[in-house]
Image (cartoon, rainbow, N blue to C red; front, side):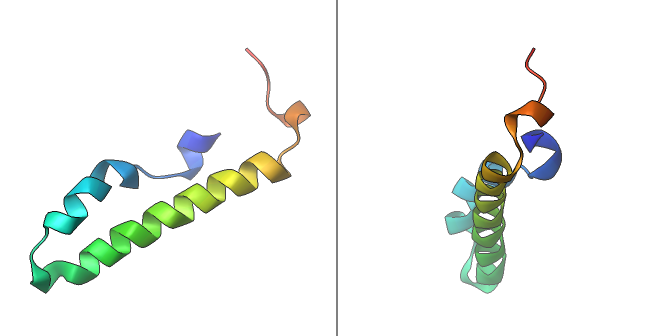
Length: 56
């Protein structure tokens, strides 16, 4: 469920501070995308009842 709804921004996050000042907006976008993904995961955990998620 999480894999389909979130992106791999955590992989790029450590690279964001290393970008030059001219690309500072890209670092802000990566951080924002990461925060949105984390908030989305928290919402999924709270909203989706356990009966919808099959246990393997």
